[in-house]
Length: 409
Image (cartoon, rainbow, N blue to C red):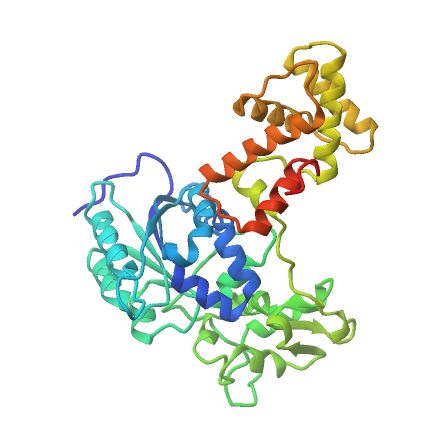
């Protein structure tokens, strides 16, 4: 089948994510990265889409995520919001085997034979069962990229055109801003030069890049980021890290004042300026219920105190005299700023709009508590529509936050 010319610039791509496989693999390597993968898929898909120019950027015409709804349904809202089609793949056997494989393969073959002409297929899974699927893509002369979060079988790796290794993926997930992911080719090797390493091999060109990175860093650098930089400079290291077997051993033997610790996911630093005492002591804390809800529903990310002040200001302004909505939002915004709890006019408008959706009539007898209650009911409905699930404690926390403390249970 010949590919028709694209009507818009960019590589036409399809993404198929085996959620269970990638998430469990990341949990074993870096729990914080696993959390970002599950709760912010837009971040790393944007990084995959970027290509520097319009011609080599990717357009994901298909975005499918396959997950076990019994175990991971709480993440569904994050993926649907990021533009993914989420396919439920519950366990169908007593052994707990889900239907992900067959669903993913069927959808992939539909995309392959479709009229759009997908040029690049992404399979996010380290499951070597997909080797035959990759072979089919290659036979149809399509590019294939595997995103792996765990050990990858040799045949599976070699069949793909490119592999985004675990450390590459973790490095992107742990960055605060999305950057283009350039997959490490399974066939490419970088030229080596310079003095010989103790094992009789040429000194990797990655040594220079990694040393420069550590020397200029403002503090200890997460190991995954260093590994990503090393492989970008010398893809051949991925085989056995220059004879050292693994990244930690390779970076630890560099010397020249570069120190490595496997603690908390692995860190590298310049011993002339830093020590192990400069490593972060705690992992990233779990986000509060307010952060989760704001991320999924567009509810303003305000504090409990800010919501409370907004409802108090609304009550005050409504009692004075009726005004149009735009003027009311401006006055409430100004009152909150004067009270030391600044909020944006857009946030006030969002709340007023939510009160309308909750069928709450704004009158001169409306109290702050009534306003808070109606608004909280609207927030709960937004969460329900977004398929967000909460236990009793989380629900109480949601009501306390959204109501500005007027509702305690």
